[in-house]
Picture 1 (cartoon, one colour):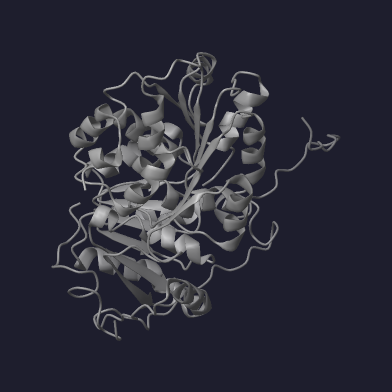
Picture 2 (cartoon, rainbow, N blue to C red):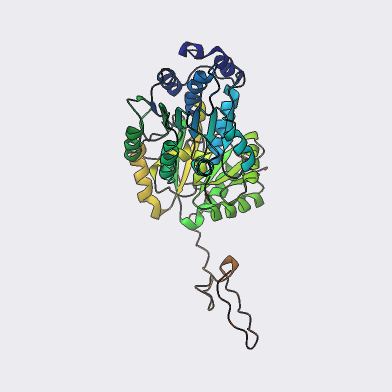
Length: 442
């Protein structure tokens, strides 16, 4: 079924051809027709299924040829990276039209954003925190904004953005259409959708909280202290052209990135300690293939849209099953195939069991005969006799106190079955040696 059969404006059909879109994906074919009719839409589909074009195409359609009347559309995204990617897709789809879009996210100059908001740019793509900052300062006027789009809605509310979203909605008195897109739909999010949407058209592609088709999954049981060693073994002994590795904390991400860089891999980092410029360079380099490995914290699971990721490796088991679905959805995108491995310690088996119940399948456990699972954990450093638990200084080492000069007053604080992995061996391919967050509001 070609895009023109959906009733889209010829200029948009031409843009889909320029961008290499062959035909509508199932979520696009299901969501675009009711959205063109002006209905509210709630769409649930796995990551990588084309949800972004599914809400942008009908939105741009109604703006083509419409009189300029200030901001008409507000698109909210949970992360800066995802908002940037939505804006990029929007510019591509609107390339033959006069419709303008603007990106409103943290870490970018306020001046350019203020000008875009004051001039009434038709489509505003934003993270809730930064947009609310502008609204509270009276910079934006959404009196005529009639369309609200919530992308990755489940993530947005997991991250605590619900109060901000409600405040933004209150600034949109003309809101007549809401498009609600999400990869998963837990009960709390379904309840919110029922509250915000009026008689919505429902589009559900695949089972809720299911993983995307085309992803081969496996769990690698390993003691916690050997996870890094097993990961290095997998990377060094398996063909992995483009790998996304998730860690629980930014500290672990930084530490792991250093280790893998020393092993000879080209590594990028994505976590909240990186500046916006560093994060942009990391994303661009990973997308272009300049980095073979991206090490990221969990929040990036919703912000990375790279088609060529072949492997996703989780070094920990997420506490929330939906986080696992989001993580592995970074591979196997747009009908491609990919591998998703998760390193699981004995203490994490219960969390993995919850994930397996959620996705409706038991992951095959894989052990590698050539890897030494019996290596002892390194001895713990002796506890320091000074400081609070030995953590008084940098790197967990206490710092000696400097003697006070006589008479100085103290200063206050002011001022598959075991042994059988997916594809060939542990990761699906031949051997090759390596030739190779969320601080503040967005």
